[in-house]
Length: 158
Figure 1: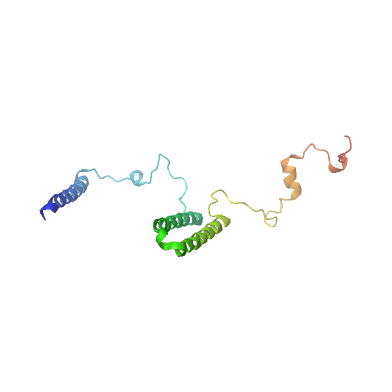
Figure 2: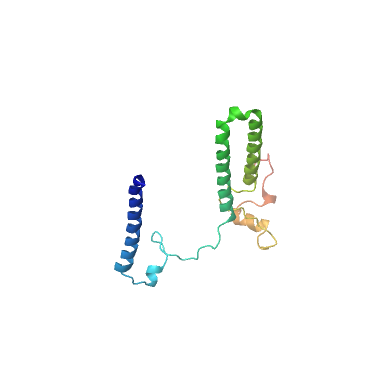
């Protein structure tokens, strides 16, 4: 028991110091709460919009991919250490495991789990009837060009 006495003493002193600091700060610190003091503050930027209520699903997909990589490493390291003892059975088992892991990773890539950019916006002509092929082309700058019937055909000189 004598050999554990310094560790016990250090632990008790640590707890006493923490509790003493908390009590002293509660008793000695000024406590004048205002709305400005209780407002959230980060890097000098005040909030102008409400924070989103939920994280996007892609965040969770990337987190799950990270966990999958961790699990694969956790299983690969002991297999590599005990490879000689496991033999062909261990090799086939690990190949199946890595194959399933790779298939899941390819599926996650295929569904766009790692695409963090803005998604493709598909325009539906039924939604915006004013956006047609002619109005879109006109907006890009065909003004001043020759009309189709006045243009020379390919191979003809202008």
